[in-house]
Length: 203
Image 1 (cartoon, rainbow, N blue to C red):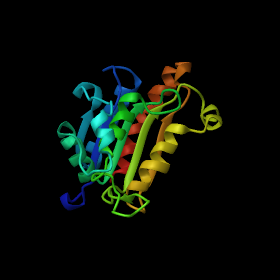
Image 2 (image 1 turned 180 degrees about the vertical axis):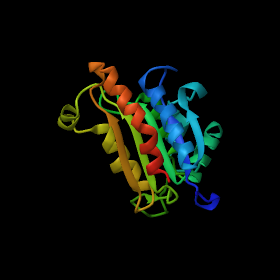
Image 3 (image 1 turned 135 degrees about the horizontal axis):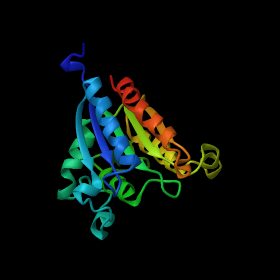
Image 4 (image 1 turned 60 degrees about the horizontal axis):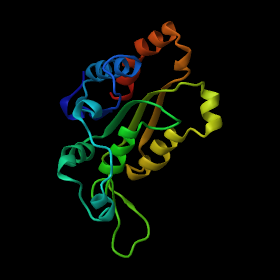
């Protein structure tokens, strides 16, 4: 039995331009797993919300000053609220889609994800609340190809973003490789196993 006081607080960020296909199907399976685990969930569907990924000139000019643009306040509040961050997206050109990268650029900002104290030359992590990052993603090529390419998208999440989180934060890379091969049976098997896997990680 899951007690309310022990419920995970999960922020799901979904990034895909279509409402059907593999990644949207993966989102539904993620949501099913979170329901099974009893987690408290907040969802941002970046394309559905019309998220603007471009960092403005003013944001760049004032990027060391704490705070985000008014339209990003809910995103920042949700990021500071959660203990688990789940990102559901396709890997394109070895990394995150521009929409998701823009979300990172604009929301993981000073006063939200990090601080730079006066006189300091190193960022101070501010997302101590985040104890787990889960990436659910697809790759067009096989895993060994991604390894040869350096797994850029994985490194952004687990070597960069993770450093702004709790020092004991765990990371999980739930990836489907070789989607360009269009093996429907293998895709279905991955999707069918996803709810149980997500539930196990978020109990």
